Length: 424
Ligand code: NAD
Image 1: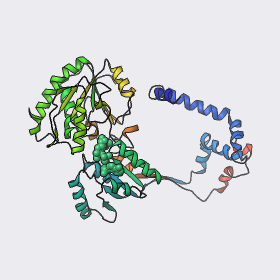
Image 2: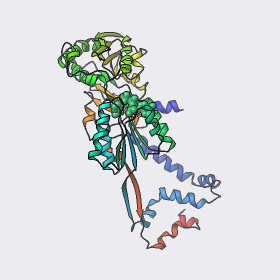
Image 3: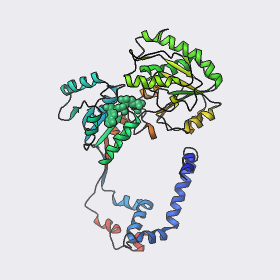
Image 4: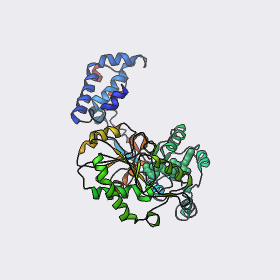
């Protein structure tokens, strides 16, 4: 049953007429089964049938309650959660800590900031300097490795904002669950990029190469792999080679604009992925320099090692598919990614699901503060950027301040209940 639901969602359940019809059917159920509902729920409330009827009345005849509250004041108070923990990754160590911090401060929270131990200099800078600018009673930087962070997470925070890998995200969420602490999880994943047969290949190659090789491929929203036809793969190769040379010169190792892998362990992991498919561009590595050339792999199979994990390095595999429909099936058979990219005029991509989407480019959607940024499923939970960051760190407290007058109007909700009183 669950499997069937997974197939239907996103297609069958989206049209507005469908949703309205289902809600109307639910209304009919409540109306036609009123008596059965009262009898069925009576066993759990000592036969206090009036309470259920009152509950139904709230939903179905809310106008009467509106009358009761006309002289009252109803408002939403935007409260801070309290003490927030922000844990950041190493790859954009300032942006990914201070972005959430701005929202947390704006919403009125106290904040503990935990930079990545892999971005040592940034961690030190923040620990040494931030206290000179911010109120140190309310904002603290904790430089901690894995063990200390594990202990830090044993404390009860009021909100945890985590950016990092899905595996660590699971641990953070498990630690938060012990205190029922709400979380935002900004995670990674494999972002597909579909290229249709009818695009301007040169522009596609430049936009694709920029997104993939920026920061040596160590960007959470980087296009992780390309899906296209065999014909397009052949056209893309020379165009990608040209784009890489245009950006980084004939020897990218000497380019000041091409980065290095963050550490030895990460280097070895990424280098091991080069055994997939056929190296069509690049492929050179130098462990001492933590250098992996901008690389494109052709004819990669779905079963190849590079297709089993987030690459997070400067390698772009191309997986050949026969059509856009096959590409969509390929994407839908895998965990929901942080971003989906398409170079195509076809809107069929709405049959997929991802944290975000960008048509005819890569990465640029995340620059817009008017768009929420975040994952779905394995790529994360929650959203931020711009006003969404403020909302993330804000508890919207529904408040009603009642008028003490007009007590007679309240008679309707007080027992004893009768059929006449409840209007049926
Ligand atoms: P990571 O998960 O290894 O580390 C992230 C943070 O978690 C660090 O501060 C680290 O100290 C801490 N940490 C690591 N292991 C821990 C543990 N066992 N218990 C508690 N805390 C622990 O990630 P990373 O290598 O720094 O960054 C790369 C990952 O982050 C990639 O998967 C990338 O896609 C993802 N990422 C996501 C976004 C986003 O906005 N969605 C942005 C950047 C990076």
